[in-house]
Image (cartoon, helix red, strand yellow):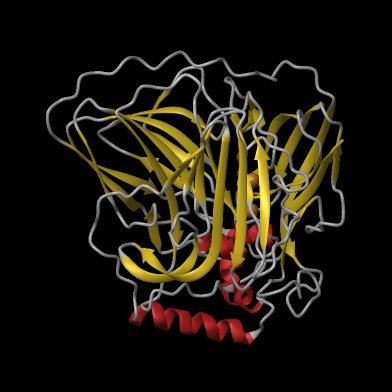
Length: 494
Ligand code: C2O
Ligand code: CU
Ligand code: CU
């Protein structure tokens, strides 16, 4: 892979000089017509839709229009007019019917990220395409032993995922615990980022954004800028945190407050872990307990070094500034302490299980076959595709090809190898992954996630039980620009 300058990367946009000009215009706009968020407001929870007697019927309308973001009027993509969309609150064994109406100008579809449900038919089938003006009825059936935790939903139409998620299409899903954890209150915190110009519109992604993965200049929690949360000393709260950013990693801190991590994604630890910081790759979720102590704390996201795309763009480091996400003010009469957190079931552990198969997946970035100029690699795949190729095992995504075939019921060990100079958060649909080796060393505890970060130039080993469902689905990088750029493969379990 050759050394490439920043300017060349812009030219590699496949739009030639046009994208360079657009990039210049973008700078002009942000310098002169900046979006200014409103003053901090109290945190607003997304509307909650809860299943009753084992069923939930939801109508979601995806549309572009004016909505409230960071306390101002802005133009974005929304489910049911708001950002984020409603929170779906479910229980194991539920049947969920979602009728999705597409009022966007582009095709879309729906993915229930992390849910252990069938990938077939009108269940979590990301090969479905819903044209503008039409609707589709999804039905998801959660197994009776579905793990409790935090999940989320978002569009998954290949080539448009980054733009639609960055535009505002996401919402949280909660699967409740069978034995509730006593808390003073539960909060949903859907964290996202967005870029808005002075008129409140989202500028188009640049060629560079599509290589690095777009990050917004405005951080949002439930669509708000630095909202305020209030509690009394001693209160225990449960925070359901979703990293809905298209590319940004979050390294969350709440200094001065006690943080305990119940788990990441569908993984639940046997005991809550005391933590000072929680890192979430795009797509990851955290289930947190916060025990309030007197004072005012700031929920911050610290910079995460996720590589310099290629060692080729000097200065193009992503997630480089710390961000204040929310303020947590603890005052008033101390609360009476709540009952202890009930014992959590001990998670399944595949570290010593027999393995039915092993394979390695290689995540790579490289220049298209044409090298620097107007080559063919990656060109012509819709809007703004660049010449940077994003591949798994040397191939870009092709829905008509089956990349990986596994036997239903098998437990496999996968080595996820990243040969590129950027991190890739690898996500598999339907089946969670147990991380058994990272940084070249065995993992000394039980760690289940559905998005696993594979740092630049390194490997991670996971074990996956391909149980309960058959059919075809995908794995991919959850930097959504990389996914749209081709870093996705198909898998069939039969
Ligand atoms: Cu969160 Cu394949 O997606
Ligand atoms: Cu997913
Ligand atoms: Cu990636």
